[in-house]
Amino acid sequence: MAEGTTTINNAAMEPEIIDLVSFLKKMGAKIIGEGTSRITIIGVSKLKATNHNVMPDRIETGTFLCAAAATGGEIIVKNTEPKYVEAVLNKLEECGCYIECKRNSIILGAPKKLKSVEIKTTTYPGFPTDMQQIFAAMLLKANGTSVIIENIFENRYKYISELRKMSTKILQDGRVTIITGKRKIQSAELACTDLRGGAAIVIASLIAKGESRISNINYLLRGYERFDYKLINLGAKIRVK
Image 1 (tube, rainbow, N blue to C red):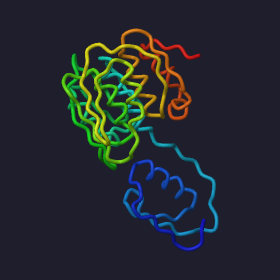
Image 2: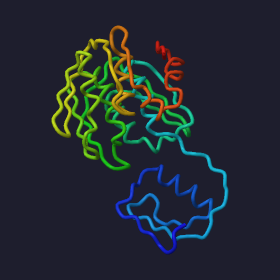
Image 3: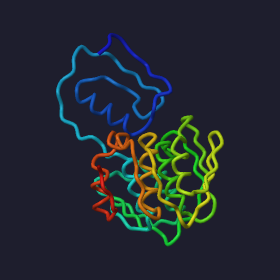
Image 4: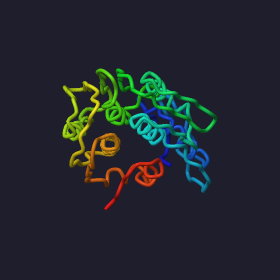
């Protein structure tokens, strides 16, 4: 609602931006270029009320797919949009997972043993930075050595120190993390370091031997709705205090 024309250069191009602009346009906003790196906004004097259905959460979709892959299970994720997670699905297939996409759902079947992969985070539609922590936890069970290169944000490896408490083999230097898959992962006293790192710690705990205790779960509550409830319905043994 600012007077004149505003231009945003180097804008994010994720589907969430397109969804936000779609909502604002329904309210009467004048915006051009959503989904590109240059967005132009022409100020208007007022906005009106509207109805809008928020797009599916693609990172939540990826999280549950990886949880099923890590635990050697099968899952159907409904009310999602496969085209928004193509980079994630490609890597899951590379890990040996069976993937079947339908109009608004994704079916995943885990292999007997996951394969190691190399992941490089990049801007959409490439592999999302919010999924590298989730994959790191899953790859603890993969055969061989996996490499993750974080190209978007620095300091996104705080969770690694927590995963190391579980007798895992992880090397981290700058933007590069090297994970050597291990058959037996030990339970531990753990703490969520951030939202996606917290989800990674939960997945690692699901595949660990014994009972893990996780603190600082407020990070998880911020980004996942009824995370424990959904995992329990999938067969996980979780108690929240």
